[in-house]
Image 1: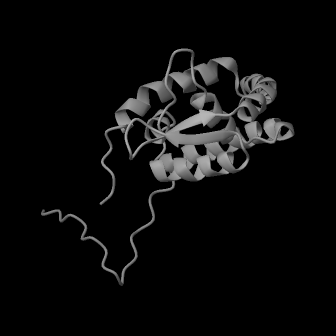
Image 2: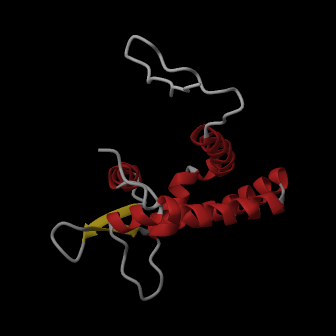
Length: 165
């Protein structure tokens, strides 16, 4: 008996739905991300910052003896593309929380947290700590530790994923 591989669907034939037991990893990860992001956003709301803005300010803060990060370097640290980073920075710049300064060459720009941005970060820090405690209480410290370990293992593997043409 000869077994034929199924032929791919044509434009007139829609592709068959995946089996019910197959989960979409992208959907699952995004669902978790949305829930956790909402918890952080709600907790940080009194500070006027969203979780993404707090994270951006946290990473952009200059450490003693270090030069400010470029937009490209900050995007890499936060695992986002430069276009999204530029859009997010624009919001913080308009609020006076960061300034963009010329980098070491004509094409690069560095992100500098302003005095107002540092104050906003410090005000939000206590609220962020509350969100950290809350997510651990809701999900379990061991589960969050396992999740963080998994993320640290998987991010480098996915760094080599080729971009769509």
